[in-house]
Amino acid sequence: MKNLIIQAQRLGDIVLSYPLFSWLKKQDTKEILVLSEKKFYEELLHISPKVTYIPIEEMEFLKNFTYDNIINLSHREDTALFASSLTTNNYYGLEIKNSIKKVHGNWQLYRTSLTHNNHYNRFHWADLNALDLIDINTMKKTIWSPPQGQSNGRIGIFVGASDEAKRPNIDFWADLAIQLCKKGLNPIFISGPSEEEKNIAYQSAAKAHIPHGVIAGRFSVYELVAFLQTLQLFITPDTGPMHIASFAHVPTLNLSIGPVHPWETAPYPPYHYVVRSAVSCSGCWQCIKKEQICRNAFIPHRIANLIYAMLSQKTLPNLPEIILYKTTRNHLGLYELEYISGKKNYHDIQANFWRYFFLKELSKANILFDEEYKKSKEALFTSLPKLYGLLQKEHLTIIKSLLITEKRNEILAKSAWKNYPPLMRPLTSYLQLLLENNSYSKESRSKVMEILEHFRTAIL
Image (cartoon, rainbow, N blue to C red; front, side):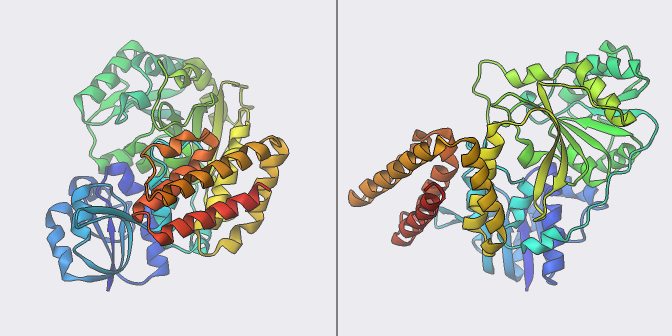
C-alpha cells in the first residue's frame, strides 16, 4: 500500500506541505504519492522532500492502488469527488460522496471551523496539515537549520501578493527602498510574472530613483531560489515566494499586513522574522473596517530602522505600533511566534487557552498537553478573573440552545455560532461544524455534550 497526499492548491500551499511529507516518511516507510498542479511543483523539486508527484491531469492513474492513508489538503471539489472513488484505510480532509460533503479528521475539521473565525487560532497551517496522523514526538524531533544570509547588504523586496489588501502600496515600497539606501544597503525589487506585479516593481524602483534595482518577472522558481540565496535579507508580504525563501534557508522578514494571520501563514521554519500591526483586529480573516487600519503601523523609515538594527545587531528601536516576532518552536515541537519587541495583550492569553483546550480535546495523546493546558487556564483567569462569570453564562446558553434544537428536531441556523461573543466562537464554530459534518447524529450530539462538559470543568 501507499500514502496519498492531495495538495492541489497554490505554490505556497505546496511548500507548506513539505513538513508533512518529511514527517510521514519518517513515521511510515510506505511510498508517498502527491497529487498536485505540475506548474507549481515541477520547479520546486530541488527543495522538496523526495516524494512521487502525480499531475492533476493524470489523477486517474491513482485508481490503480490501495492506500493506507489519503490526506486531502485541498478544498477543490473535483479532487474531493475523485478521492471518494479511491480505496483507503484512513481518510483525512474533505470528501464528496453521493453529493454529500464531509470532512474527515479532528484537526481537518478544526481547520475548517476557522473560516472567518481564526482570530484566536494559534496553529500554523503546516502543523494542522499533520496533527491528525503524525505523532507529536516526530514533530518534536525535527532539527531545523538556521538560514544562511550573505553579508553583502543586498536586500530583496518582493512586491507581490495574491490579494492587493495583503501587500503594501507603491509609495511604501519606494520610500522603504530610499531609507534602506540611506543606510548603505542595496535594495532590489522583485516580482512575479503578472503584469500588475511587474508594474508595481518598476514604479517602486522609479520612485526610489533606483531604476536599475529591479528584477521583475524574470525568474523561474528555480532561478528565484538561486537568486534569493545571494541576499542578506528577503522582505516580503504573505506570498508563495516567502515560503520558498524560508524553506530554502534565506533569512526572511514577513511584513504581515492586511487580512492574514501570521500564526497560520507566516514563514514556517524557525529563525525568520515577522512584523505585524499591534492593533487588536490584526490577524483577521477578512477586513470589515472602512479602511485597513493595520496599514498605519507600517511606516517606511521605521521599518528601515528596524531592519538596519537587526542586520547590524544593534539595539532594536522602540516601535509601539508594531510587534516583531521571530519564528520558533515550543517544547512540544509546535510552531511558535516569539515576541522580540512590541506590547503583549490579553488577546494572546485568551488564544493560548484555546490552543491547549483543543490540543487536549482533539489529540489522542492528550496527556502530553495537561501541564500546558493547566498553565493556560491559570494565566487566563488570573489576568481576567471576570471571564469566569461570562464564560459560565455562555456555556449555559450553548447547552440550552442545543437542547431546544434536539427537542424540536431542528438544526442550528447557519450563522448560529456567531451569536456568541468572539471569545466563545472557537468553541461554538467547531461544535456546530461537528454536528453538521455528522448530520446531527446521536453520536455527534453526545460528542458535543462531552466537549461542553470538559469546557465546564475549565471554567468552574
